[in-house]
Image 1 (cartoon, rainbow, N blue to C red):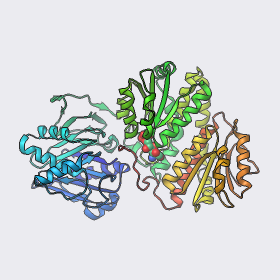
Image 2 (image 1 turned 180 degrees about the horizontal axis):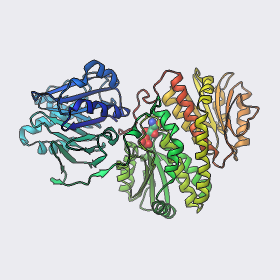
Image 3 (image 1 turned 30 degrees about the vertical axis):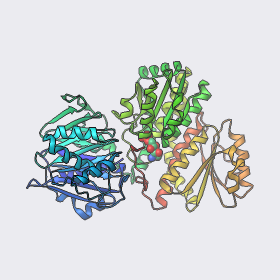
Image 4 (image 1 turned 90 degrees about the horizontal axis):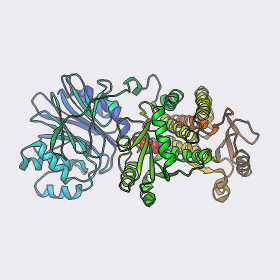
Length: 588
Ligand code: M6R
């Protein structure tokens, strides 16, 4: 969470930082700020609370004239959402400005020590400690690299930061547990939490590892602070384009990303056969396989687990990222942890990976962002090939995850060709569903003002319903509850009364007859049913048609995404930036 960006080069920094910052806004949007060296070599800071456009209208970031600068967009953790708590922070002597992504765990103690030494704090954040600590360490060290190294030894937690120095005009870019990527342009450098923020300017990048420090000026010099030496690192070429990270005429990233699903799904299935086979062998030979994911990615794990059980008769248990510790005793050197993550940076999942590795387990992953930490922590990995996903609500990445995992289940059962055939039918249906977006919007109006919404499904359709529930809560801010149809009679029927709405997922599979019974139970109590099915049943009050295909429950996914999207818009929300959330959740 939080996005950081730095620029140094021949151009005025502020327009570049502002454009890049907007592309990082999905990482947090509580407050933002920028610091740049002005003509008199003084660090000037501008900041404010709220979304970037709003802050810019107030403080005019573009009035910063320097050719070097740093900027930040915040997702608040420590300290309220106030102007004082917005980054960047400066040292007492005005020599340094700093932006930070992460959480400094021991900041209370460090702050106490620094206050005793006479440092003056202006905020209640953990971050501000870092800039004062570097300033303090400089007094003895007299060398900024030594001072940063010392700081990195004293600080605990995640503290990736950019430090702008007034005297040298250099940017010091240090990584610890939150991503940091250096963009290498023509006579200019960028440092960012996410490569999409500088893609407009360069597609050449260096991915920093923990405890690496890049010093940006006319050159980029990199040190491994743990090893205490300068190092050379490979410059990679990013195959994403700046255009992929634009709305391309759509009103929102989310809608664009839903509409991209058919195309992206084709790319998802286009995996390197050798890598796929290698992974299948590993999964086949493993004594135990556990999926690990958070939020929407966890729902992909649930769906995958059902297909592995159905097709391959294997029990690949899904574990929620944040619940990993409860299950840590299950891991040993005959176990595979299969991590699923769009960003490849989710802290809950990374924590699980570290523990699993320490117990000798093998880690494999399915990620979207190339070069991400989870990818680099994995022995084997597949990529989603979904292109940049900007909207906080995950859509195209989710469908890609599901498709790839189902393809793997077929492959494990020696039915790869048949599986691909079924999945291609699904992809064809995605295209048809996009044409029904307006119809789905009209239907969404039926539940627009509901306090509660229920979604029921059985088998694979149950975790699909759970994903629909998540999306509706996340962006429409309607309380939704997904249930396995058979569970209703055990508790939630108590909430069904005349006028209560329920979205019923009724694929044409072994769950259909039971689902009809469950729907009858709701109807008998006056509930209203929006049925999603390949057959228009009399018991539906409203009906969304599905085509009869082998993997029908998967086809329901974009329908639910569109319902959530339209509800969000109809309720006046911004689906790309749901309140209190951020896309990349790098805190525990
Ligand atoms: O990047 P990841 O897939 O690891 O992210 C996991 C969750 O934070 C993410 O899926 C979140 O639940 C989405 N915003 C839901 O739309």
